[in-house]
Length: 228
Image (cartoon, rainbow, N blue to C red; front, side, top):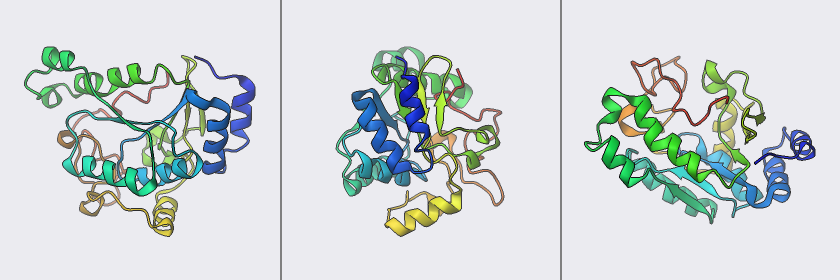
């Protein structure tokens, strides 16, 4: 499902204003756009922009079955607080879990396979109706995201909108405070990028925000944000 060149051009003209970008994207794309959110450390700001622009835009949450309890509580709290009306839990196939991870411990010895099962495959299926996915990724999160564009065209024709790509951690913290947005409860404990419980750890001083993800592994991404 491709996006028309004139639509991409119109979206690029609004790259500097997340709310205008999202409002225009909703107007032009209608039911062909959804938001992908982890309801993590900095998710509240993007979701506040979504709520301001189009509160009924679908928000896809990958419910892997391995989240911190705090994340699941925060997902419910934040959706209520912002007035988001279309948050959808995207879950892995029960049959696939039974076949490929019957003990629930796949993450411990093959985290790539676990992410494939619990994140990549469910998202691939859930995102089929959408030409565009909105994400909360930022250039400053890690060196692997340093060149992230706001309007990102993928080789398979899908488009990712990254409205906060140019925002710094300081920008986000200040805007969240200005808007009175509730923080994820684990941020106060040093979790600056929050994924599944078994594979997420607090971050040390001076480390990338994502340094606590898959600590001890060369892995830096779960696979849902690929260049292809």
